[in-house]
Image (cartoon, rainbow, N blue to C red; front, top):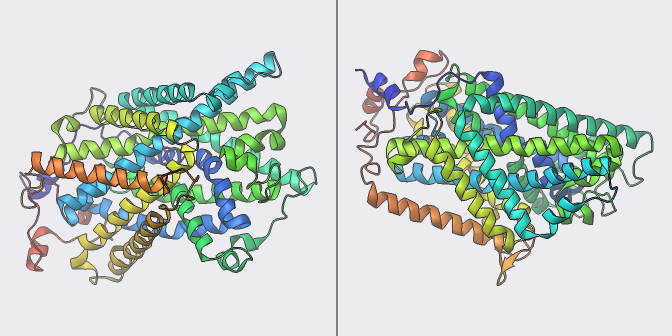
Length: 546
């Protein structure tokens, strides 16, 4: 058996091969980003940081994401594997590096599952109460009030939603994709209608008087820095939000082994996902600013109703859409949260599956269910997410914002490490072609350095008791405590697995597939050195299958 065939055999983990096409992958990518959920959770905070220049942050934040995505694409061509960041980091630099990179992905996705379920609970009860008011008592807000004011009720609701999503993801990736078609289409159309009506109402004078006329200046980051009251620190804070709003596109790479044409489909799906999401964000942010402005007035994006509730669409739905159509917005955010809650399970579950498959975690994590899904890993991800929320909700009244900032820190962590892994993996071929220089060195290196800077900056800033929502423990910001705790847990688990499973952590025996030569067969424009070429170039000891 050739080395190449051994590599292909090593990557078989029992997943449903060839079950997802380009459209299905794009749908899963968009739903994992959850554009409606993301906008309702971050638009108010972003406006608080950069005022009317939110559009400039949207497209400026796209730049490092594109640079990182190009590095991801190169790695996916060389080593198409569901373990993505874990597999690539271990293959490029070493098993411990890869393990911690995988932990960053797992931690960020599991933490955000709790946030998604919280938003889903809010809009689920908003929708039910809305229907009851249409049918009967006009002052019915019972479930909404219970969810807002009773911690026990909110925790039970959120945990129930996480359990439901866990069951759904356990059963079938094709069912997941089909579910996303409907949910993604509905949420995008509904909020697009919201944006159109908001613009029309502002232009015809029926919106709030503190709305703002459209200006191309909003898209200019230089104008942001020079604007009175804003500076570079505002730009950095805004970019933290930008990192969060784009996060999730890489889910299409974790389903590489389940896509049709795994060498091309994931990369194309990632590119289309990012482009469509950018256009959507620019339109929604611009329309909301035009209608409500960025002041502290009743409906302003930095007003008390939005900043306290952290929920833009819940405040603006009725003023923009009217009583009869506002239900569309509630359903859109509900569908966005539920769809993302389901699709977000894909990344951590498949990362843990790969870690178990290659020996970095216990073999139970390598087991797939009878539905060809990562059974054990999915259940563990859901259980940890539910436990995290049950602990966090009583501690922080504004768990959504604290979770968002914590997630952003770990996004920077594992995206940055993966970018550096791309640079190092292709180190022997940087200067073999003009293309290699840009796509295997420059773009991933710049993207990685930017995210490393953001990670360090936000960790230091999060120590302040005023960071995020202002939740703190003895004067230390809660986001900093959460970030350090999650990182410490990762280091502890790394040490534990290093002791229990030493074979994986010996580079000479780590069973991560080489796969680099596969790119030559499937993409004529891609050149990856074979093991023999690397040896002749003086590369160090290579990974070999057990």
